[in-house]
Length: 513
Image 1 (cartoon, rainbow, N blue to C red):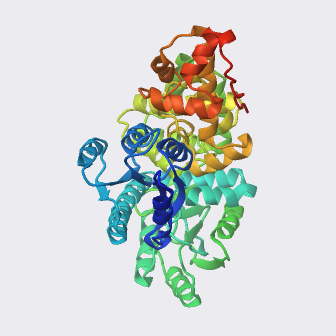
Image 2 (spheres, helix red, strand yellow; image 1 turned 180 degrees about the vertical axis):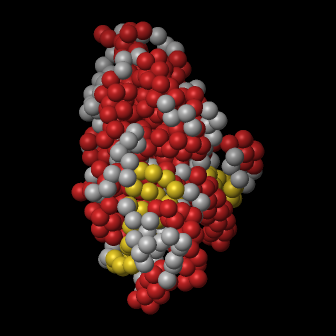
């Protein structure tokens, strides 16, 4: 569902807009209403709406100022402007920020519904295009991801349910197959391409496809496919045992393993292949050897720990270049980079968008040097997170302290561009740990710093102070937020500092976490 925010300084209009449309039936969730631009901006920082319906003429921050400020934080928010006759100059200015929807007051229900429907359809098309792009990126790394899954599952069999969930998000499994066929006495000499191609032909004749590449260990081939009826299982087994190749010493035998869930099925498979040191992963075009080598999870953990232990950027760059030069082949280097990324980013908070973004950048690398450069940047962030042993919220608060003058700070921006986690996950985590919303925490920090600067410099340049604490070129908005949190305007506070004996202004205590 798309997230919707309504902003209007007139209570009657706010209430009417909230209740006159069944937003859920249109694919929208109403996340809140705001009575002015300042309140709306705080909600935008906390609730990351997709659509904002806003009046133009409002106190503190008008509609255009709200759009301008929000645009610096999140350019993907769509605004629907509401205004009266004779205010088309506002519409012209709004177009500078990509605003395409401008409705006259009193707002007609049918017109607003049509606007929302149009935007919803546009968003669906964009989401579909984005999903297709993600699928295309994941398709490029499909085999490396499957190799990584098997290696991790062999290393950590007790963690298979969570591993399965992690890799399922990355489209490692093509469907919800619950069946595997174990084909015995398959000698490696005719495994590829003869046996593999014949298996594909049999499955095609039955109208199904492999759910995972063929796994092969010492004369046993494991075919994972949706043979989910007894008829399909018997037909497949009969076709397999009829296969015969020159110099074949023993006829094939086949056994079906059927489970209630896919991760239970893989538990059975992993248990059966775990005793073997050498495992082959076989597709219709190629076969890959899996052994306890550089790409084993334990070895990857050792490599990342070695990387984290190095003190300087130069040492870390040299370490990666030495490691990857041993690989020589660029495709093997990319597979190793995928393995390291997955080993480093194993938490549920890591978003599919972040993973796809890394894979897309990785597979556009034209040299091992470029791969090292990309991986070094990713691991450096991870190194900071691990060596400092700080939670996401601690890192977020640290970033705010260092970038308090930035106008772009919002929960969504920090989730996507700094912590690389899901914004919904981060929002719940922040409220749980801090006991307040992100916008409230950020405003308190900014006003606290403003008070410190004014107390130190005692200058009348409110505009300069506003810029230093992240309010940009908007001293009026800064004054409103300052008064909300202190009970006094910046000018009155400066006056009190200069003439303490002549003023009886009482500053309300700033809240601190």
